[in-house]
Image (tube, rainbow, N blue to C red; front, side):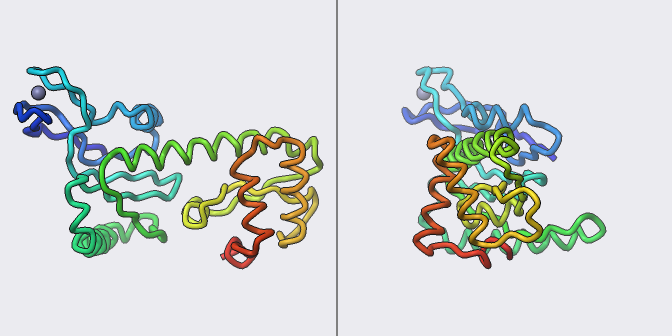
Length: 214
Ligand SMILES: [Zn+2]
């Protein structure tokens, strides 16, 4: 559910005006809304007196069911109270889950962010990863590879793509075949930065197969 409210806003020059701000954003079945957010168009206001454009601060609950992302986005000014915000988020999330019971169970944790710009940055970096995933999907057959998908929540937690290359015909992913497939992939296309980074993480033992197969 997406909710907007009329809020009183103060511009950096202290002019006060009203604007409609989104306080809950659900992008399931609404890709245009996600695109607008990534483009930095949501809750961007312009002061009717001095014309300054800025992001208006308000609490936002962001939910993307498909990508297993729930973000509690507090105004930037709340950053100093991060511990309280985290406790509040946990409590509210548990309450929401209790109401959800009949529906599909949410088995991932919400994340805490400060300022809408942080949410925009997160979504932009995930968009870049998705672009690389699309390239992998396209070139995999040429390289005798196939793709294995891990949960979006886990991939976000590990900071790696959610679509991984493995040899065609492989039944269960193991570290050697994943490493070799990544080597084939980045040799073919050295511009795939997130896959190059994943390969480095594996080679430097900063990530292992058990993390990925959780
Ligand atoms: Zn102003």
